[in-house]
Length: 89
Image (cartoon, rainbow, N blue to C red; front, top):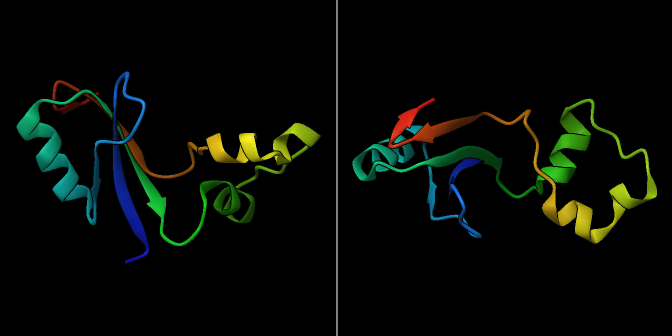
């Protein structure tokens, strides 16, 4: 396994589910009629480091190398899907 699928409900401070496959995540999202974002995350690598290695993103300002920036970083280059009431939108 090289990735994990994480669901973050709309308005939630923390993720509410982590799944080994997108299919399992989508079944759970549908079953509960959830609204939010399902995103693929690489295993054993932070999103910031993954983006620097695999996308055009490069830190260009000093603030883009701070712990706060790196800790909050996410990338639209990872597979992801938005859901409303359990259905993709």
